[in-house]
Image (cartoon, rainbow, N blue to C red; front, side):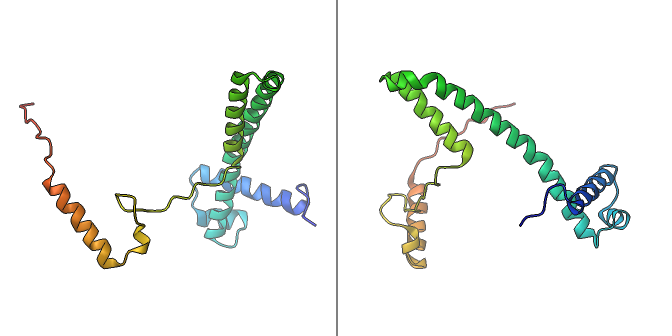
Length: 156
């Protein structure tokens, strides 16, 4: 069973992190913070401060995300009856709201993209080193034959 967020050990740990962060803010070294707050090492002090900073950044981001989700819920409710009646505009808007919600929550699986040659016919991963070298040489040769635009030189 997980330990309660208000257990004496967790509260003491949070207080040590707060103190370590405060000392770092006034310019103390990690070594000095470890000595003063009671961490085993300079690295332990660094890790505690790093965790505290990440938590400070994570909480506002979670609040902003939750606020956006509530707004999306309100928009969904406002459009739902129109969409159910077949209103194409409301349906389109709801689909966009659903896409935004999925992005906020990380619900969409990442798109897998396979590396291919410039002509899109063959994956580089399937080519051996010699084939890749020949392909690169062909691309460089093609690039040399292309005319590049001449830059005008002006007196500044």
